[in-house]
Amino acid sequence: MKKKEKEFYKKKLLERKKEIIDKLSEVYYESKEVEPDIVQDVGDKAESSYTKEFLLSLSDVERKQLFLIDEALKRIEDCQYGTCLMCNRAIAKKRLGAIPWAQYCIHCQEKAEEESS
Ligand SMILES: [Zn+2]
Figure 1 (cartoon, rainbow, N blue to C red):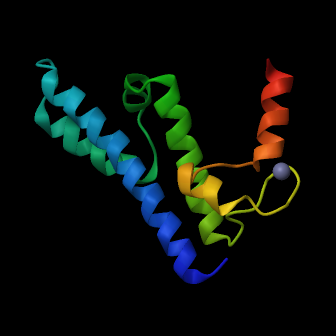
Figure 2 (figure 1 turned 180 degrees about the horizontal axis):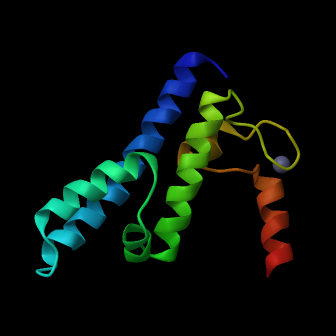
């Protein structure tokens, strides 16, 4: 994958990550029981590791997505990004455009879903 492409997907991933974290910050602001300082704290910590409270306040979908985004960002750094973790084939660009944190190509994803259902 070209450097320009990697930058493109990295940006997409970071944008989505920010969306999730921003949404959480809003939840914190709305809650009167929590001091504004904590929101800042959560924002800082979210860059490296996540606090238990932070993860608990996310829905399952967001939590999973955040995890997948981090994994995808790691793969970009390791130059593994865009390759299916199951069959090692390239994931379609169209798929990465829609789901930049995708771990599997469409075929393996379908297979995995069939097996889990
Ligand atoms: Zn695959």
